[in-house]
Length: 312
Image (cartoon, rainbow, N blue to C red; front, side, top):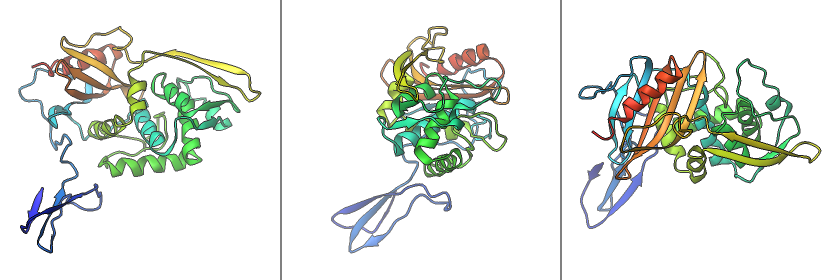
């Protein structure tokens, strides 16, 4: 924060991030008033280097990893956090953020042939068919809990009219958050060589998404069931469980740490990826992320090791 001039009062200015300028702080003097400008990153965790000294964390089988203390704006651990990597379905955090900013949870989506026609091998699908109708709320549950790629396309077309225009909106909103070292080509994270993120940019995106109550509600849910309709008005049902193996009870976090929720992602090119919101016994919140781990079991072992730094 910079102060110029002195006087009996002050005016405060909040400065948004501008990717085209190197400074996030400005100061001006006007009519004897003290004018304040807060830096864009004032309440954010910031690092431009690896931070591993003094920790006892093994992330040797992951390409990037990080642990952020949100209360104290402190980077506890950072490994290759600015390296561009494929995000797989962690992409869907950005998709949800854009959808929640520009849409309404009760908006009704009519599924297109494009959304229903994903044929890529291994793509996670919730079974949407052309003409099906569901709310944005329902689609977001399918997107974040079940990691449904068809729900991602349906959301993108609802919000922006096309996948291409939605990806442009994703990139615009990411840049506004300071996440300028990523590039999105689609709303689901299926493989595209020009589609990449960094662990640090994912922290910024996830941190912003947490401001939406519905996002946090969905990522902490273990099971979801709902009814939607086909093109003839006949009822259809969703019934699925979270892909987060901590919430599913298949892995346990360290003692004194509670995993609130998060997002998983897996493709052959991206490996196994995971981003989490956790809390310690005092209620302090943490974001942790691991990208491109070579095995799912190892991913959760390394994430548990990373979370163990919280209680130290």
